[in-house]
Amino acid sequence: MLDVKAGDDASFELLLHKYRTPLVNFLNRMVRNPAAAEDLAQEVFLRVYRARKQYAPNAKFTTWLFHIATNLALNALRDGRCRQMEVSLDQPGHPGAEEPAAMELPDRGPSVEQQMIARDRAAVIRAAIHALPEKQRAAVLLHKYHELDYDEIARILECSESALKSLLFRAYETLRVRLAPLVTPPMA
Image 1: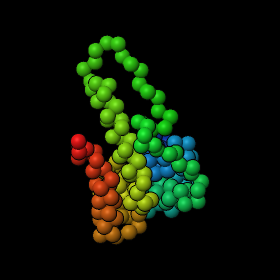
Image 2 (image 1 turned 45 degrees about the horizontal axis):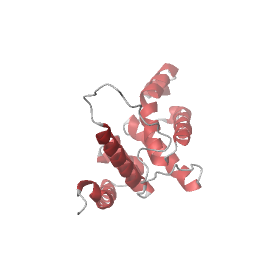
Image 3 (image 1 turned 90 degrees about the vertical axis):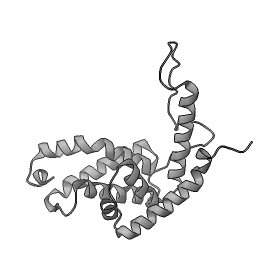
Image 4 (image 1 turned 30 degrees about the horizontal axis):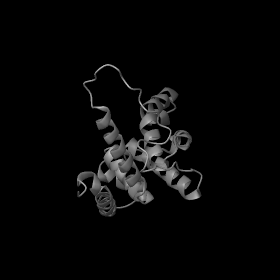
């Protein structure tokens, strides 16, 4: 980013290439709308480019980048600019996903039944994360999916590390309760 600040446009292309996919994935998990996630990612990189002259390396570049992305996603959700895609717990997978084609040759991978169970579990987990309050959802996504440490997440969400730990504790406790049926077999 310091090269971008110095006027090197090729370095910006490198940043765009390196961080675009993780950023779009994060934004899609936040707003649950692939088209809106793409638009928001474009806005994030536009803001990064516009702010290049004022950039100060006070934190990691990724912290600054995800801070911008989180704020844009939260604002878009609050303003209603992102119509979120609904996740049904009755239907496996995610909306718009195509079913994999059946194979006629024996496969050493997971069976169709195992794949369906895994897809159902993933849909339930996604729905549970999506049902969290926005800040809790952002904290969980940054912590678990992007593996950022507490200090980076606290900077992104503009809170103290102890407030972040409390936020994550509440989020994980909520998820533990909501996802308990996945680990506890139903009573016969």
